[in-house]
Image (cartoon, rainbow, N blue to C red; front, side, top):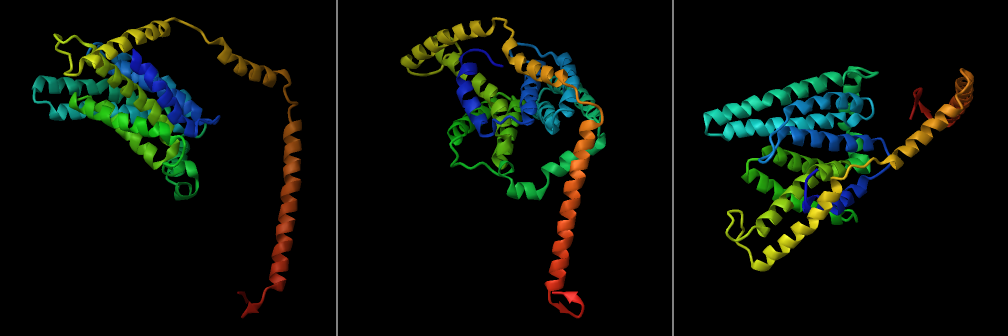
Amino acid sequence: MRKRFGCHSRDPIGNGGCAIHWLARPHLFTILFLIVTLHIADRAAGSAGEPGRAGILGWLIPLTLLWTNLHGGFFVVFLVLACYIGGDLLNAAVEADPARRREFLRNLKPWTIAFAACFAVTFINPYGWQLHKHVVEYISDPYQLQHIQEFQGLDFHSPAVVYFEPLMILAILTALWDARHRRFAEVFLSMGWLHLALIAQRNLPLFAMAASPMVARAIAELIRHAAAPVSSPLAAPLAPWIGRGARWMEQASATFDQTDRIGRVHLAAALPLALVGAILLATPPVAGVADSKFISTYDRRHSRSRRCLSCSRQTHTASSPRTNGAIT
């Protein structure tokens, strides 16, 4: 996601922050697709040294279609797009140069088109608009917010907080750094996901995935400023030993960067999926037999439970005192 030492320094903190909700459940699809979405958005927005490539936002459309049919967290893609749209709008609002302001407004076009197209493909699912209704009702259900732990705020006595607190502090400092350089989309991403992580601990992995690359970029930029020669305009007014340590760290991390650029294919990760698929295809069920067995078993159990419930109601009615024909 980001180059140099910062990318490697954030791995223990980011991965440790995900430990509180690192479970083998369908939300892993949302974590995976969020990482891909952030990478596409980062490449599309560009940076000071790399121009943006807005055309790759088109990849978000098939990604959203797949995401919608795998997990209900597909609305996360719209939160990411909204952060970049809001960043351009805020830049246009505070920009004094009319030409630059028009440039920021022109940059909104591919992002809004991608937002609309991604929203349109979310209706291509077996349930149509009912899926959107269910998602809204699910995340706004007060019972879940009050009784299910993962929907509640983070417990700061949890062991995983030892990772979350450093990442939270670094994310806030990075957001201040980004705001100073008018990188408002990154500010909205890190602070928005921090807010969601604080109100519901199930959002902590998403915050870690969104904030860690930006923290890594800030760490790499600090190292670059500390390692710059005294005569360089990038040089920071720090003690000489800090500059020497930063230069050593930059050189050491360069070897990791070279290793990361080596192309590789992780075949071992695909073997469990291939094994499960082979097992499912090896012994296809006989049409109608399994379904009829399940239905007949369900009917017997359900009818038995209804008879027991009816008997308990009759017993309760017979033994209950009555006043004016009403059960008290």
